[in-house]
Length: 282
Image 1 (cartoon, rainbow, N blue to C red):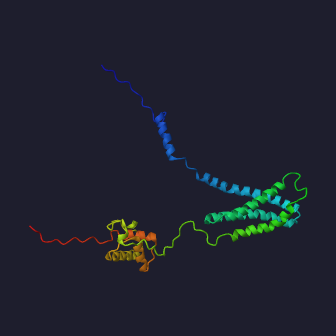
Image 2: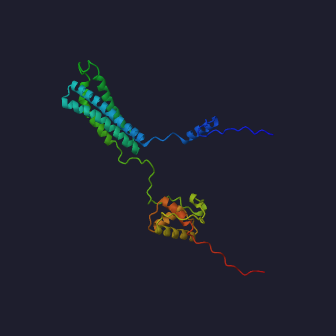
Image 3: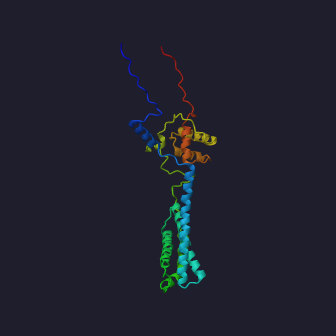
């Protein structure tokens, strides 16, 4: 009598310890899935802190530098109201330079003048902070600070006025902006012997449906222009189609001309006529 094979207990999948290949596959799947998403509340808090902390730091630095510049100006013999105005001009000049740099960076214009103005304002504030630092500061003769504080208002006015004077009247465009109503270049619509352009490679028997975004009158005009070009033996290109549609009083951009070209080559074309059957020769 053959003994029955020993029964092997099947481990419970919920309590089984994963083997090394299984753990490796799990880690690989987690790596491909990417990091865990950040909760919306935590992301919003990080954005708020990232925006608020630089502002708080800037206000603190502004207050410290503002007081130091005022003290140095008063120590150099300026009246109290003039010392406050000098301190305000130093800090506001730096702020105006930062705003102008951001504006010119967006429009792609030169940054030399606003950067020079920012360096002048930050340099003046830093030197005044060093002069006013220490327990024995502002106790001796002001020396060179007397003419410096006397000439600073004029210099600050010239630098800030130069921010507006050196801004270009027409900033350089960040990308090419070609008006849609301008005529196409003369080299696009060439005769058949000059070589096929890029949009002549699409066969005329394309069965794709016309896009629904085209107006009906524009589609009708495009089909009429395509038929006229075919009768004249000229290729139906995007440039020729756009030119003919514009001559019929419709507005057609370059991108829309490409969509219109696909539409007139679609299933709206009449199917070819089969030749008449001749007499059957037996």
